[in-house]
Length: 181
Image 1 (cartoon, rainbow, N blue to C red):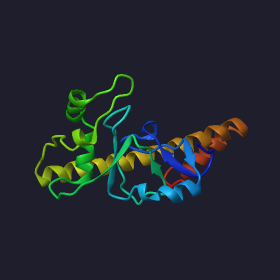
Image 2 (cartoon, rainbow, N blue to C red):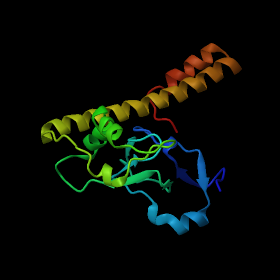
Image 3 (cartoon, rainbow, N blue to C red):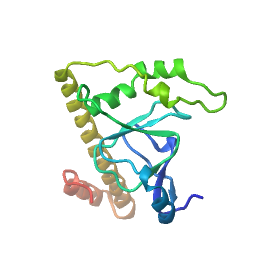
Image 4 (cartoon, helix red, strand yellow):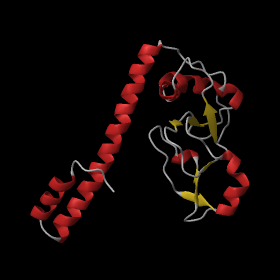
């Protein structure tokens, strides 16, 4: 049974390459029973049921959460590819075509773990992977900054409606380069 508050229960619909959204929660008691399924920093969450092949890399130590059984927890066991590059490849059209070849199921599509393990990953040299990794970091930072600006803009619009436009402009000027609290 899902709760309004508690430990996030991550379903396939909550998984994107950029973030994990939160809609459903489970109790602390249930979490205590199944906490061995808690993802760790450095793992890649990959959807294997429903919307197949959505990969999300956990850059930071994740807060408490439990992924559904439709999500695999992958750990990179080689130094031939970095995690950001691997996640990007898993989200690419090349992987999507492999999924299309492999999937089964008439109502809900399934990509079996044995099929996932046979996914062909093109290996680029370390220099190119590092370039890609840097671009991914830049993209994530820009995305985070954009979200902050959007929150500031929302607050500014509220100020403009409740007070006046000049108050909103002054607010934006005061916070645009500050991190959102």
